[in-house]
Amino acid sequence: MPMTMKSCFYPLIGDRIYGWLGDFIDIFSILTTLFGVCTSLGLGTMQVNKGLNFLNEDIAVNTTNQVIIIWAITLVATTSVVSGIGVGIRRLSEICFSLGMVIMLMVLFLEDTWYLLNLFTQSVGFYFQWLMQLGFHCDAFELSSKSFGAADRGRVYADGEGDGP
Image (tube, rainbow, N blue to C red; front, side):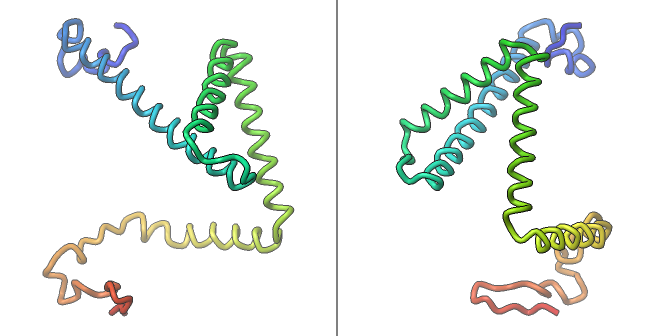
């Protein structure tokens, strides 16, 4: 069976994956992937443009700069893909990991280090403390109007006043 999206549907539709229905599934999967990548690239480009503007006010937030950023990202991605998994994608991954580590260590050592370490420790402890309770919380009593007369308990209204416990 070919390594395409229509092959995933073989258990459901059988040999019909080799007809127009299978072609439709492949075309639909390609288009949705394309739209997803384009959306992520567009939103990321706007974010990079705004970040560069924050670092240097001479860099304007406009369409021209965003097109330049898209071309730069496309050039780097194309170069990485053309050079192959062993060289291009591996090097790109190593550069991104190294850059992330440098940024993380800069934030750790150039800010209040003890505060950040204490915050990390307390956040991990808070996470484990509430993991079971929040993991299984489904708000069943709040969704029911027969919740023992406590349907509005703990809500905050538009005027900022709450009626919590």
